[in-house]
Amino acid sequence: MGGHANRTPLELVTGALNWWREAGVDLQFLDETHPWIPDQKKTEDELASVGLPRTAAPSPEPAPQQNSLTQRESLPETLKDFAGWWLNEPALDQGGASPRVVPRGSAHPELMVLVAEPESDDREQLLSGPLGSLLDAMLSAMGVQQEAVYFASVLPRNTPLADWNAIALSGMGAVTLHHISLVAPKRLAIFGRNILPLLGHDPTQSPVSLQKINHEGGMVPVIAGWDLAALLARTKARSAFWQRWLEWTDSPL
Image (tube, rainbow, N blue to C red; front, side):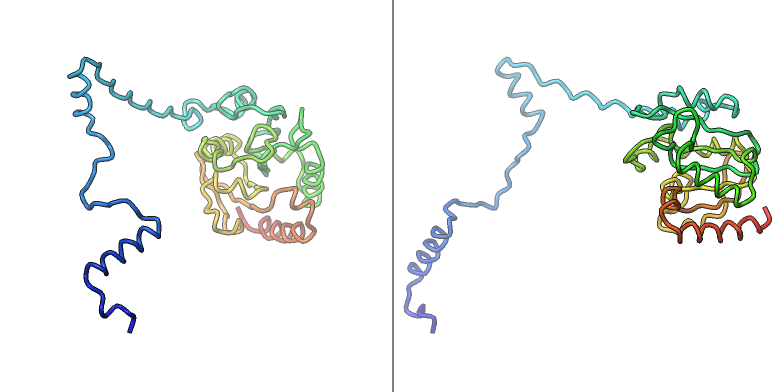
């Protein structure tokens, strides 16, 4: 069977070689190792023997610069100084088409509202567009006076398609926690899930599980959920947030 019983060993070997040639393998491969990366010292010695200069040693890579946003001494010490720093500190971002917009409100408010960024048309005042109008209506329905609220954003300017991983690495989480510490609110409402990882919340967990945030000045109760744009577009999301708000404000501080 198979037709190979009467073939000589030479015929078998010749047939195998012909099969490999037809398959396109016509080179010899050896098991001996071959150094693909030349020995640096041997190469330099050979260059020197023929009068050529030795290659210069590679320069060490510069040490990464420490981000100034993570340095405690570079942050403003009072809320009064924060607005000017927020408008002028170059390390906050790389610029953009929209201007920087300062937060508004006073220290020690009943409520601090934190959003991801200003609205696209914000210029002189944070949350001056449709999202701000929604928030004003919500606060009115909740019985919260405007004067009792501090309005803030994580980013200083409207930033379309923001890279939140890069933002986290830039030190904005430390800035946000420092900002909260300076404001020292009784309660904190966060609108936007991209904000939560900056404050140490595990992104795999529900925002509902985030109930308090530790900052430099202590601890503050938190309610966190969808951003204002999502609430504006979704009736069910607004209803769910409203129910959570009632439960949250009924609970003691």
